Length: 312
Image 1 (tube, rainbow, N blue to C red):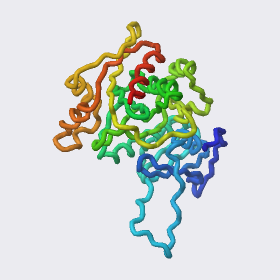
Image 2: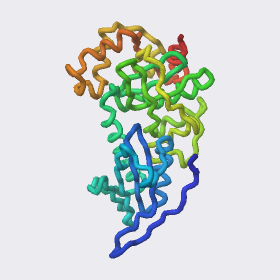
Image 3: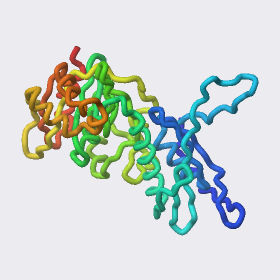
Image 4: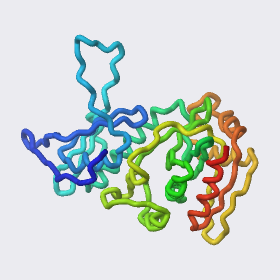
């Protein structure tokens, strides 16, 4: 597993002032294979922490005596170059992506771009903006837009559900297999606000300074091992609603209401035949749907979701 210490920055100048990219790591993010090269060992170490569950060994050199019938496509190449004085350059496949003013911003952009490339390659799965958790026999989908606290809530469910066999599958985008509605496991780094950390610590969150990188929190804070298998079939769809002054409640809604709601959060329906208009009703025909009204009591709301995930 990843060493939590941060190595010193390595900056080596090549010919005519060009940096020599002596540092590299390889990743496999849901089938998207990438190599990141840099002249900064700190950049590579930081990205390794963010992508801890996507680390991959470098490709083995081919041997003429053992030809491969169908060689794997070469990994996409990123270059992250520290030019000094707060100038970080990022390229992808020899094309300039952007410049960033700090290591944090540069690595955050690479992580985001890698996720976007991985997501684009999963076009045979239904993408839903939201989180998902799983028990032994049922998965629960928690659709929602950015900024409503779904990552904070999903981490709370995962922390409190450890003893009940509830695990986090994804916190930002959920990939569903249309043939059985099983959600994939996608352990990318969490995007979380600083004010969420003190609310999660009483629920069991433990993290070190090197786990918190800008707006990112390394997913290893939930444990150094992550079950990468898909969750069981989706049985519940729960739409969270934050009402700081109201009570916590789980209220059933009709399939028709849930269809309208879920289509708002489906990211790639238009890529399917007939724009996927039959997919959401087909999914919801086998799921029970609810509105979860929650206040700032994360534990009380998490209990309701854990009860669903643990239902046979």
